[in-house]
Length: 410
Image (cartoon, rainbow, N blue to C red):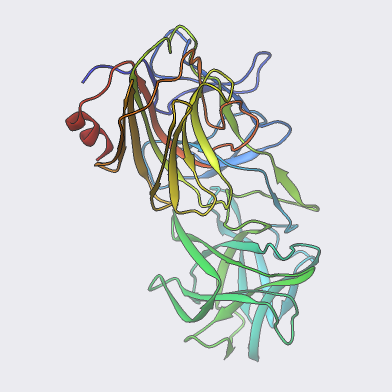
């Protein structure tokens, strides 16, 4: 197999400086393939190579190592954590019922001694810590997430609802940190992620949640929210987040007000000299998020007239191959998991491969000309920004054989 003319296997970057931040390409090594990066006016977090959540500065690309020894390039849309005092459960912003909080009792996923223990009192009643917010979500729904670590108590329930009592328009999940399983009846879309060190991030998404909402975390014992505590047994919590999104995004710490993380933009990799080709291969190894929005990776000349797009559809089920050379093909993939996608192109022959299989061929198409850039967005880099994790991206100036294409996408 020949070498690609451009390869982005995330490994290096230049953050905020006097010149534009960059994501470095592996090939070419002279800098002509490097990407411009932008995330203006806002901090963001990533999981570093030690497995710890850390903040990175404005305009700093995020090489994320969550559950991996090799980083991916994390690209996300704008999001706001509307939950104030996200790490301070002892603060009066949090309502407490039949629990008390011992602050900074254990190490959090950030590696700092700043995670709180929520302790059940010796009453026989529901034991809850909660926040009531006005205008935190609309009928588009919300996602509530929390980092949890078991102590003497290993079970927790998350509830998001319009009213405290009776609950209306509510979503909920009960989860056992010992068995790593849900129990009871789950309402809404639930997800859990392992952050190491016994910490799990739990999230629940639902719609509608209207303009006055309660977000509630309840201690559970023997699958019962009403039990008698002993003033010492509890569970560890850290990093609460409420987003008006269809899924959780990377953690956004807050103090006394909501905080917004702005979108990541990675664009303009390559040059007209590099992409002066009449045939080639375009390969991506990515984990696309089911964001409810179209997101795209494109080869183009910064116009809509000359372009090849790999486009992830808003229904969260399809990827589309589109070329201004008169190719349009939709295929089903699974979002929120890693996918390897490849297109070979030359005059009157486009082949589309997904995860080790040839899925489509077009025998009557032209090749766009004057290509000069690769964008993680639409062809003009003004919308449809890719949302997900980038593991590998390559462009070849040759058409890989079917055997080579299947091997690369397997």
